Image (tube, rainbow, N blue to C red; front, side, top):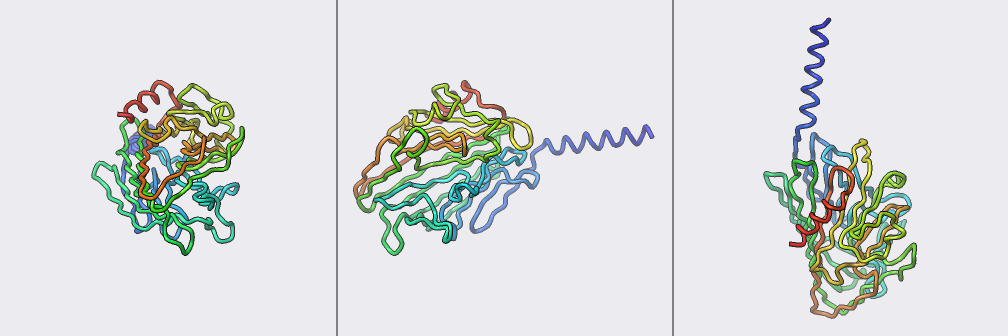
Length: 304
């Protein structure tokens, strides 16, 4: 009996050690690329032309605990981590018709070029076109998603670079912001509502309450708390200093929860044909609760 107990303990220890040792692999198709660990999705980039927009979902811990949500009932057009303009020339590119699943303005994926590396980093290059149905594009975008290799500490990051080429005169607009709504547009991150009671914001100026930080000019924002598996984790977005209007005004909403470095929060922006707009962000998935010193250092590293 004692020998059996010892054997079970040994097998249990081996199983625990095996689970703690990463076993990364790729899952890839013509429309998506995902990193797996022990068969669970760590992150997934979706670039399906049949869907209204490209997006990244889930963003998860290395153990596969999902930190983002796709198409929740309250906002079906929220897709984990994604990009959407609000209005271009008064046409809505953000909300989608519940029957057709499409926006009035279209964000078409015209090409996707994913590639993977032996260290389990990856790169996804996307070409996108912005237009009204039946009309030529008003602008195009070249998007590069550079996923880092997972770190020994249990995190990873995504460098998001977007280069917009303006083909026709455009006005990039938003719903005018109030204390509680409006102003959002651009890179956006949506979390499950289940996180609301336990997760906390942390901003580059030290605020922890979304209502107080909403609309503020910030270098970065973090949201963290206990993940679905119980271990603390979080996601931060860094707004690169080279970006137009940096530091940007951010839209933060605790009730969804949701946040976005909203380029046009403070005012609409006009671009003329021939202009080029390049934007850079880093999205960092980290174990543990948000730490201001560590996040500040990570922002400085990204800034360089």
